[in-house]
Image (cartoon, rainbow, N blue to C red; front, side, top):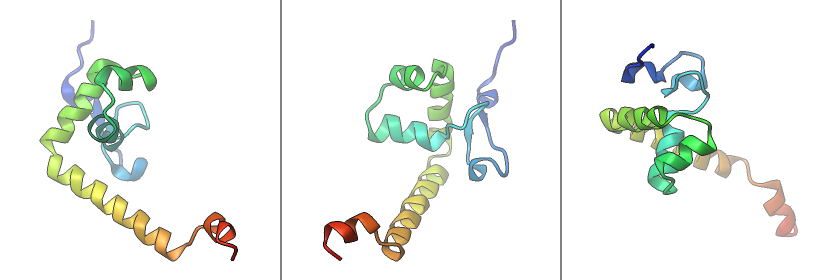
Length: 101
C-alpha cells in the first residue's frame, strides 16, 4: 500500500493553469476549491463527489490554502481585478444589443 503525504496531493507546474497550485492529476486549482467551499458554501463531501476527488484531495487543497492564505487571497484578488478591467475594456455585445445600441 502506498501512502500519500499532504504534499503529494497538491502540485504546482509552471505552464499549467498559470502555475497556480492545483490538485495533483487534475485541472482543479486550490482557488477553485476555496471558492466552492468558502464562498459558495459547498461541503467537502459535495466538492469531492461533484468533481470526482477524494476527500483527502479536497482537505489537502484547503490545508494548502490556510498555509498560504495571504498568497492565494492575493492571487484571487488579482484575478478578480483583471476580470473587472477586461469587462471595462470589452463591453458586452449582448448588453449593447439589449440596451438597443
